[in-house]
Image (cartoon, rainbow, N blue to C red; front, top):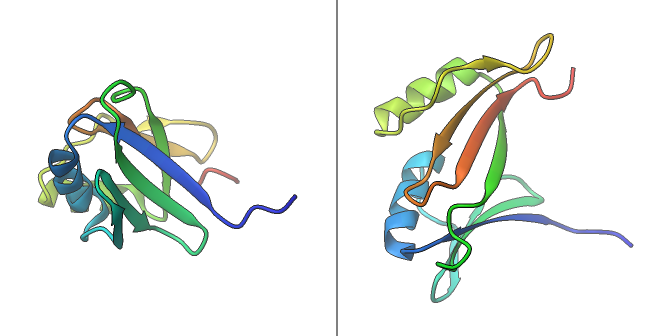
Length: 115
């Protein structure tokens, strides 16, 4: 079986609030709004971030995004009003920092995840 895409879904309580926050996180509006309560960002050719209205599941998602330069990513986020937690080591050359969306879903930015 071959998979064509990976869709990471963050369930949220208020879609409008969440879309606004993820627009700041990802630095642009959603690529598509295919149906009410859903927004998609195509972050790579085969990886999408979806924000979906699902109050009963909101706040329990862990989403990891790999970045080339963690320090610059954190500066960019801060300029958009998103403050990350402390940078932490994850191994010999791996570093990461987390942010939380308005529902408490954790988004971790990771630098050098495979080295």
